[in-house]
Length: 88
Image (cartoon, rainbow, N blue to C red; front, side, top):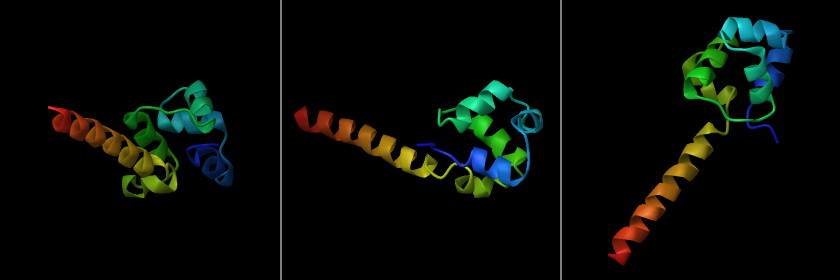
């Protein structure tokens, strides 16, 4: 059910949660929540991606569902907008 691969990648690097938190300059509690699949701010994702040694262009290797989430949100917004213009 996890939305990301943070825990898997961290463990492959033999890195503790505390070490990742220090490198990313976020709290260990934040790492816990993200590894449990909770959402976080884009800036936090950026910090984690870089702390795991990836380039920002490789973000899908850490947060693969981000693209799907963006598409779903966009289609919902467009659907709402289309529905309103058709009703008017």
